[in-house]
Length: 527
Image (cartoon, rainbow, N blue to C red):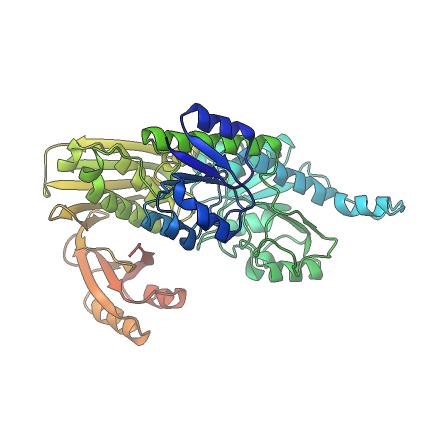
């Protein structure tokens, strides 16, 4: 009988679910790291919230551990790469606390608009400062939603109900989905310029880190109010303080901080700032939901092998795994490539399978393509929840199969339709196991992807390669491989360059300015 340790406080109903499904369970909370390491070796599963730290040291002695289940969405307290190296599946429950977090953001917006915390403190002190606390109405105001996914769309819906105007910035938000929500899709600069209130609902990724810095805050409307119940690190706290001190920002309500637990902060002590200790998911209903979900998911995995909401393991049966394994890497690379060169809202994705791969179970491969496609802006996306996220964002997903082989014995082609263009990338397996890109936007080019890549669309004119090589060399960036393709002489051409160092923004700008360069993009892939 599988055995699970619950090391953080979960609903008693979670214990019942484990037992009902044939899983033995122990509840031991408040364990220190050494105490956890001393006992973890006898458990098949570990159910946690945010307190337990699943470090590489813990995983090293967890000799029987098969799954870690996080009741909630964030897995900052789990060393996912180490878990993967040890063959431990990491699951979370990404949708169990969405309504609760959205409601907290709305509550913070109300509190900020009417200065409720400061008024409460004043009244408790025996003062009656009715004229001091002059708030603003939400009615008729413009709410800017940065990130209109699962939580952001709920906030937008509630704000529309409050008769607010809602503008949203989200590269993955389709025009149809925006219309259904009753929001106006805009670019970030326009949102900053128009919004009376700004609320953030995006994960913390390289693309979103410090999205509200001094430069962005300077573009906002004077008197703007800002709410962040998403992730610390989205706002540069020192820049926010300066904007509050100058009076440009009228107030801020923060549930998350760059460093947590936030026992000290430059933002504390300012009446213009409302602070709560990461309470977004802290309701009875949300805690119950995520506890029950994690117990169900872990039980299903340990008893039947079913995988749901796994961050580091694809949903593939034991029979299909050996056949699909080389294609999984190819699918992830194709999706990641398409995702990194796509900069506008996605409308549809078609994955075409030709030749040998068309005979296989391709649904997991399509899920992996979606994971790679969405991952540049969505930190928590995995192959299990990627199809759900695509449906929520009204991204139409289709598969086509053709068993007859054309130029290659096996081929996967990803066609992405955006609001402005159609992007296409195709790949195959060399020797049955080595992924290769063989076509980009109808241009034939054969390339193996590496950690640091440079993708360039250019006019096929003499001297381009020399100028590009000189520019990279002057910046100290070494070229590993150089792949070229073109439709015909003097027409559209593509360069896919593998380099040994990261191409920073300044260098990319210089490359973009070279004669004949139409578009340049720095890409990254897992080594």
